[in-house]
Image 1 (tube, rainbow, N blue to C red):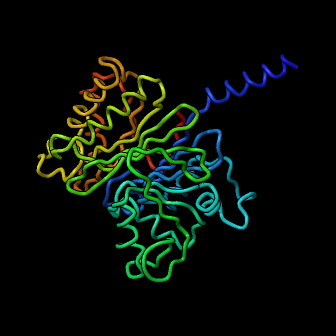
Image 2: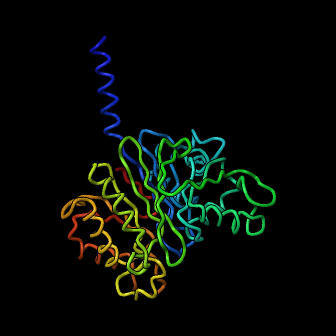
Image 3: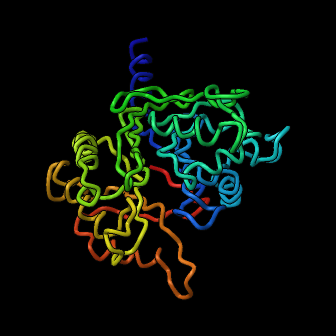
Length: 326
């Protein structure tokens, strides 16, 4: 009996130690292309439900992800009465985090809301206020939330947890903590997700502290530095909107490769010094496409990041529909 109990304990411990995160990219661009705007799904790989990280494009991203085999658990046979796209959208997404109130981070959520199932939305008080007052207000769009003016349809339950305080995220099994960011005069935010003593960070739009005249990133790097020291941080998603060469006055609260590398140096110091970030996966998001012939900002940003990467981090650029395991 004692041997059986010990085996069960060891099996549970091993299972928790091996648990990680699945990330699916529903949208990766920072504007212009309306069907491919910033939106990711994440789940603990020992849980069923995903959690949405921004929602610029949702249904187009689910379709692309299904094409790429990112949801092998969903088939035509087991999706009824919905399509596979509808089954993922309604049954596998357990809520959303919206980092700030700009349209390219929530348009997909709004447009698809008439077909969604009941679920919570999390964000800062500013973001939740923007959703309630300026989007789901009965004028721009029907009020599919449980708050605000006019007829409340109640599909979404709006939540504004206190900054830097841990909260449970619906039925996803994840915990979250939200931290403020500065985005060219617009409040933005980062969420640190955790499960089974492992964590993952998702950044909304942010400018560098030096340009923003703020210390929000400095504070976030200290928090994530503790995660690195404790060997909990599995990866992060952060924006790099423009290639190097864009003047600081025209960044409008965004990062370039040069600025991201400078900020990651601050992160490295907070994490224990030289080499402490080696091997960390940093997913680059929110690249702004160009409509100019022969211009490829994505390739240029990737080249510039690698050229300056003496940190040993692993820069990754997911494409729409891609899935990664951490």
